[in-house]
Length: 66
Image 1 (cartoon, helix red, strand yellow):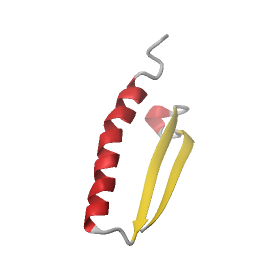
Image 2 (cartoon, helix red, strand yellow):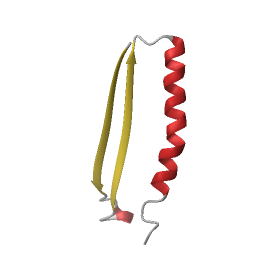
Image 3 (cartoon, one colour):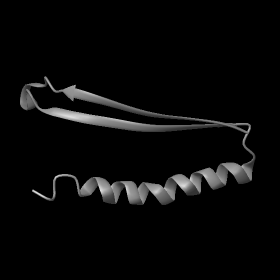
């Protein structure tokens, strides 16, 4: 199995009529597991699912200390 990962982030400035000037950030995590067996794919899915909850909880704390 060959595993490649990428983390991509993009900053955006919204120019839609109702949200002019609003800034934002998007992020994506990509996992490419080529040649993974069914059990390896399931393990990768479980790792991603387990860490998604931790990541979401951590992101919800951003700015909460102000």
